[in-house]
Image (cartoon, rainbow, N blue to C red; front, side, top):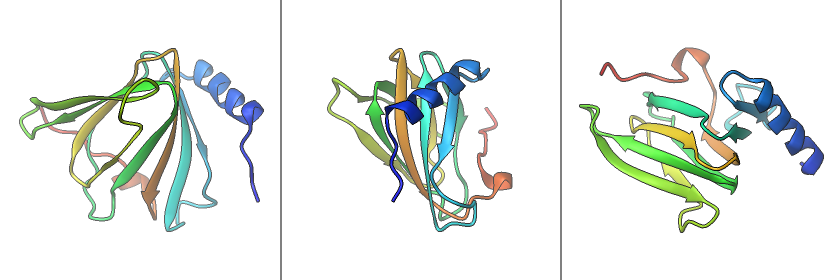
Length: 134
């Protein structure tokens, strides 16, 4: 059994404070070859994951907002905004699942946010993200 308490998660936020991207990851899986990839993502206000998509057929991903609020945006192929959703505390939506090839971005709106991400493996850094050409 493995547990994740306040101290470990607070340390993750401390790591985010030291990061240029204002976020930090804690992998819960043992290897990038694991069939299920699981990780906590600590984000600080203003941390922004630029529009991207995952091109391989198995690259769906699910986020659950454990703490805080994020803004998830979905985009059309031409770069126009398809949807803007707020997830987390005080909002109806607490989690979402993205399908392969859905162009999306994520921004931390609250002072800090903690996400649990689950996705199918294996993880290959070469195919981690594709960026639209717009």
